[in-house]
Image (tube, rainbow, N blue to C red):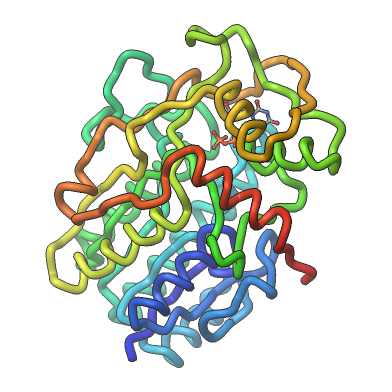
Length: 327
Ligand code: UDP
């Protein structure tokens, strides 16, 4: 069976990708240093613990498994943190990816699926954020991901690394079987924080900014279910294996939800009040990020199944109540 290297396979999205890859008949090999990931989340294939900056380790992993492709999820991904600690974003995300891409090329592997972000677009109100939109990141996280996109384009030209780049909007929800789910320590993402507040695991949710130029004053985001997102990755992998070449795809649904709307949905699904207060804006946040493209649906045949707000919150709540990792 064909092996696929999954960097960040012990993390939120990577662990769901491993489950989807296994279901599709591949062997996902998790490459993760467990800085933010969880050994407990590695359930669907072998685990090779190590650091992407360690070229000798990567060379050994490529030699051992001879993967047909790499799926690269491992990264720091917090907008707020990236504004305070840009150095770790450039070192971990950009230098780690460069080392991985060089190791991929040296091993003769030619298929690379990369986890990028809508944060590469920046804050462009009234612009349709399709894949051809100019990229003007306003935070270090988005800038680090745009740089990796550029590196991939260069290695595509020099070494024939065919790459599918997925620019994610906001990933939410969890495996409906609750085998894996979203578990960050500390948690910074909206839906798990709201569920923690509902559950009394924290005092209240603080809404970051209520004076944005949006209908209710809070930021608008486009949420996509993690299971739908990783299904697109399997389709992207198959696109590459069929020799269809390099391509960029947004992964969002085209529907925007404000922070207040997400909070309301969490209250409705759980049928509980949400303790909430209002705070200042978070540095690096764009007012509105909504996917303006159906390219993934049209070209990859991607059909999101679980990306309604209600289902995402329901699956996140199911995981919240039934799943966690210990190590
Ligand atoms: N947000 C918030 N309070 C929180 C965490 C997040 O108001 O405690 C807002 C955040 O400012 C953004 C949205 O929720 O507008 C989604 O944030 P998240 O960190 O989940 O994802 P991001 O958009 O940064 O990828």
